[in-house]
Image (tube, rainbow, N blue to C red; front, side, top):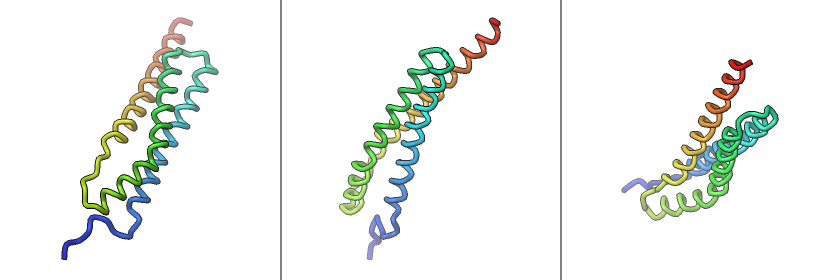
Length: 115
């Protein structure tokens, strides 16, 4: 007898919670970093990158419920899963955080060198 693709072990629920954690950290971290950079009076490009990361995290968080239902449906119907859109959103969010941090560090280093 063939084994089903899904079981009752709550793997989909744990995966959904992992995506929620990732999205929440991205959104909250981006928002916190944007606030910190704004208070320090640093480069607006850095603030924009952190705000972009916050937006990616927010969109990713909003998509988790829809994604969970699609995964459940695909597993029960034996269809292949497609995670590319969420992975791309998460990747762009992480790249935005890295870009914002790099711009912030370079701007602060340049400010220290000119003093």
